[in-house]
Every structure is written in structure tokens, then in C-alpha cells.
Length: 121
Image (tube, rainbow, N blue to C red; front, side, top):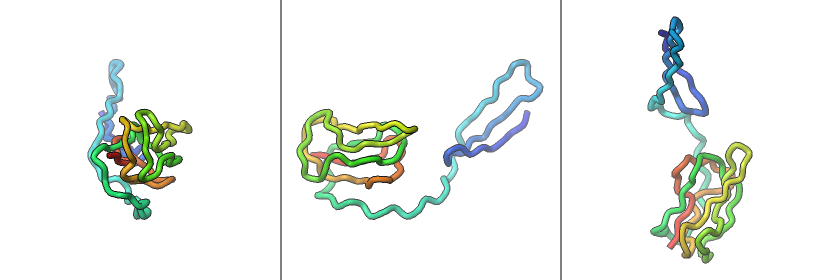
């Protein structure tokens, strides 16, 4: 068996390969590692204060467009932010009726799945 360390999109994996195997498949396991140093984040857009309802990214990607603004009333299902991932535009919608309290990202920001994009009251 041989061990390899592979980095894919900033994620580090330790891979063990059985070379004399009887049909054995390679096994990959994620390894906790510090990602490459990211550039300093740009200044966040002004917000009217953090709200109690978080609007989170469902997938990793890049902020493509911000559809709502702080103070805007939104209904359940209204698009707040649009993410771009793998050449697809993914709308992130309001989970319930309310008012946008903060927009915590800017266009072009990379985001991970589960990252807070905005908050609502």
C-alpha cells in the first residue's frame, strides 16, 4: 500500500492505494488542514444590525448577485442572494416573511456551504 497526500480545491486528503490488490478500491479520507491563506476580506456592506433569522448558503460558491437590500421587506421564497457554483446560478431565498437586517457578503466573495449570507428580522 502507498500513501499520498492530495490537495483538491484547498481541501487536503490522505489517500491510501493498495497496488497489489484483489480488486481493492482506493480510499480517500479528508484530513483537517489549514487552507491556503486567503486574501483579506473586503469591507462588508453596511448593515442595520444583525437579525435573528440567518440566511445561509446551501452550497459552496461565489456571490454572483445581491437581490435584496438592508431594510427591504421580503416574503417567503423571495431571492435574497444569488450564488454561482459550477457555472450555475443558485438563488438563496428568504425562509420566511420579514425584513432584511443585514447583508453579510459582497459580490465576488467566495462562500462555503452553511456560511451566513444575510440576516432577517
